[in-house]
Image (cartoon, rainbow, N blue to C red):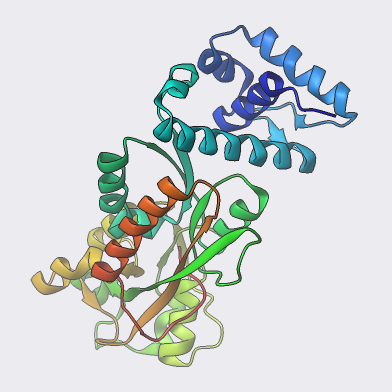
Length: 308
């Protein structure tokens, strides 16, 4: 059975754009036409491919077809570079979908992305996720590359160590005086408000265990789901937080932030995984990512397996 590629393109657009109407706008057709194409593909294959909702969610079969469609788009972009006549039938520049964690995005990744875009003319669709879960995005085919804490190779992908993102446990001087008026005491940390990114963020507890020997950290929590929000919250005296050192170095030097325990920091190992298809564009992106990692991440440092 051959695939109906217009229908496959409609399915991919629905998943990529997060809705039938947005997919229709991208494809230049009506939402009902997109829905008919997806339904026809489902009937032909005898399987539900997308669960209708806001946003639509691909089933396991739908995710596999989406991954195939994205790889076809990437290979078409590669062909267009070698055979310019093909480019006339393609809808604009090639877009690479990449999963990246918030702290990498907020510190070192974007300059690499900008250099890649300038040199290649390609576009990037950056998907934000916890770096412990970005590899799952790659396994499902939702993205073509990922910054991840998981060193286990994904089938059909190449894995390259990037180095470690270094974190420090910091707070504002005012906050520190308020909660530790006679100096920092590890035993009192359970009563001091801290910042957490989301329910999967265990970096504060890991630092308390590795740096202070505290096995369980059950402290009051402010939930702040943004890298810049973490920095701003710490500066404002909302709570103590684990912040990437590249983001806070100037604040530490100026005394706007102080370390709870000076010098006791935590390194989080990161890896770059990417599909082996589409060698030209992914090789160019990989070159820029590795260069940025060499300049900004700790090479050969002590590591833990979790970050934001």
